[in-house]
Length: 245
Image (cartoon, rainbow, N blue to C red; front, side, top):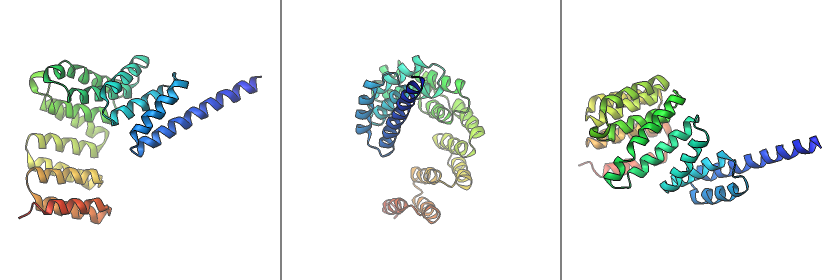
């Protein structure tokens, strides 16, 4: 009898893991609607699975169904208040929802956004995405309601202590927001030297485009293509070359 119980429990665990993998795979393939529908179906038989609920929230987020995502993440936060990632995702969904409503409604939400990100970092001081979220939050929220270049810079520096590449990218964004072209360029170039990813290159490219330095953007994309061999970079080069006199 004991062996039967153990087998049954292991079967449930394996079955649940398979479902999680299926939905995760659909999300990775950007099949968000299918992921949403599968998650909802699986949750009917496994309502206690927090991972399935989280994946459903993720699918809703990708589909920009913010109200549904917020409800799920809020419930997860209440069920596991010590889970940093749940707080981060809850804050992220709230923040995206705030972008879609009136300024008055957004003002009533943004404090909860900040608190969620701060809580995520309190629970997990190494949470890179939550640090990034606060950099963006303090940069783009109006100063009268809590935005602060100084705080954004502070979290960019904290981010650099966790990930040198992310830190340089964040410092570059802070400088770019302040229209300090030279400092932003220097930080992005440091990120490229250390990380060398497409993301690093595109930050520098976008900086050049913002400041209408199109030839420099093309040169950077050509360098990135030689290193990475990503054909999408060639398409980007063609787009930008049309802006060069």
